Length: 292
Image (cartoon, rainbow, N blue to C red; front, top):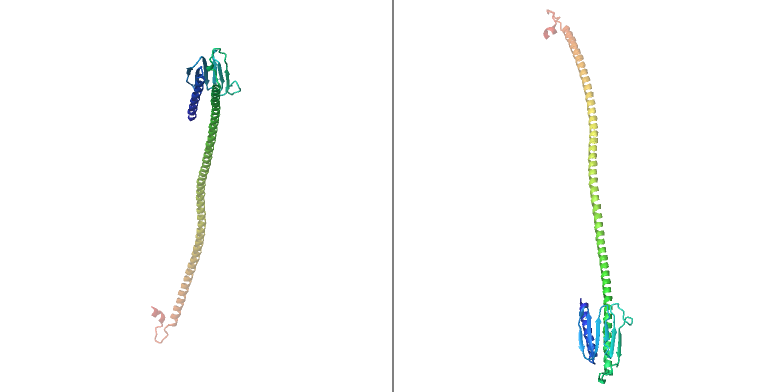
């Protein structure tokens, strides 16, 4: 925007200088009509200073910049062809100025002829116009080059920013993917851990059950062995006791029989030994009577 404003101001300054140069031409006895168009703004000016009519048309964009035509009654013809923004001028893209000084009018007065100072002023005016229009042409080319560079810079910036965003998004995607892989690994490890824990608990419970059964079996066998030993011992004891009772009873019976037999024997013997053989005795058994 600033470039366009400065460019418009420069063009307006060029237009004022061009008008000043044309006024200089007209001050020497010519009639000049100037039509200048800058970016769509037209500022026509007209001055009448003599018998000659001079018309200058300036257009800055894509057309012939300046052309000067004279009427048949003029004695001076100034022609400039300039092109901008790719148009071809009569001299290979450069400004061309043609200054024709003629004295074909037979009734022109001597004081109206061009002198050396006037020619120098006209030459300076032409040089100024050439310089300004060449500057405008260069500005147009520079502006076109600037626009191209600007577009290229914008494209490069867009590509670079897109590449930068792509790299950033790719890094973010890689980070998210790595995090997702880690989370999946942890989740799968947790699921496997839960499954292995359940399997371990099941195996542990089965092992505990088997161990309890086996220990019960071993204890049962030990208790059965002890019971069998006890039963055998009881049977042995009972057998020996019964034998002892039988022997005791047998012994008791025999001893009692022997005892009574011996007693009877002793009693009988004593009875015979105590028979009263005394004189005057009764002849009874003392032992028997006494025992009675």
